[in-house]
Length: 462
Image (cartoon, rainbow, N blue to C red; front, side, top):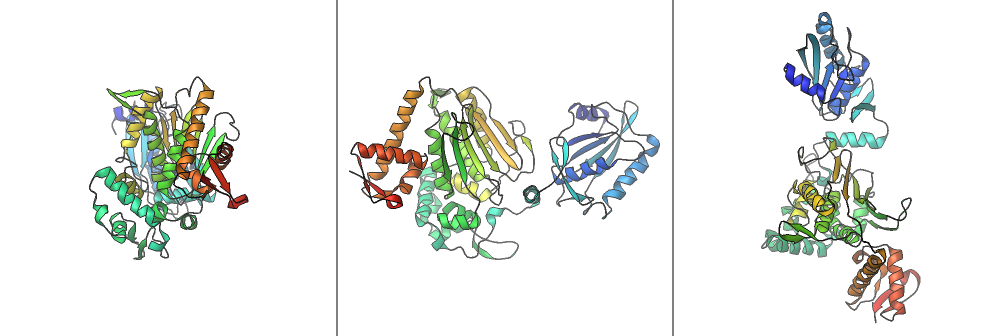
């Protein structure tokens, strides 16, 4: 780096990939902690001879060679580092002072300095404690996508054939004449890469992605026991919730349930995209819901959450990121977390091309509420989109929502079958308690009949 480049770098201040260190005749221990954390995260530069406030003190010129040799010896010592991190050393003359730049690229291993794992969080080197943090770090280092994990005992009989038919129909609806429409079930699964070969063991079979997309609820609970999405409304009661559903079914039905839950509770104001009216609300909901399902790390114990509060809509889900920090249109570098699941979502029209979702969120958030979204990636992906004022008359909003729920219930029961409440809830997007309240009211009006008692109660249209 030349003098102007290093000045520009210093002007940015310390951050995820930049650290300033005072340095005398020898580097202190914290230099090696930063080397360890940079190698474990996304790499970065350490500027020796620069103080925390960005002022340049320099390092003693007579000690430069000794300092460089010390850094190389310690990072290559197996008693200090379990694996030697790669690094480059550079001397830069800046205003008659010598600055030593230590550039550390992200490495393939999980690095330990003196037996301790360090990770980079913002501008701080932190000790990694606990299994969850260490598990997230190992995930970042893997080239293997967990969605590709072959499950030997999983067979076609464990998948829902109605869901296979559904993705076949949705793909044709979304893209016209789709190749999947002419394929047998096993051929479709192979084409979608849901039937694959494990490159490490050579085993062939259905994958975790197949189970999550098309499996029965029991199968999904077996292969991904911690997978679920909590959807909450926290407008009146911020300590607990006003309403809630917990979704833990296949990803396609999960998408529909979460989208419906949000649509019932978010305003849909008049929005023009150029000269065409669009539902900015629906586009925002689609992008946030598909993102939290497509780009989640399903081996993580961290639970996903979608929250509607008085400021907007928020999502949090475990991620497998390489880079950490806020995502903007300027630094957008889309990397798929689950490329197989993302491809299926794209084929069936539940998601657009990689990267377009972020651009849509920025565009339609501005049209919808006049503000930018806040997107932050890391071991946990967080998203927030502001929502305009709900309505001036909350009473009329409640009436409209009640009518929507009643209509959804009647629509399910109009098929003529007597069904339990569990068959009705996915179509309403509200909690079981709310559905029971509406069913009781409909029964009092003589529109719905209840059969059986307790948990065996079923409902039918009168």
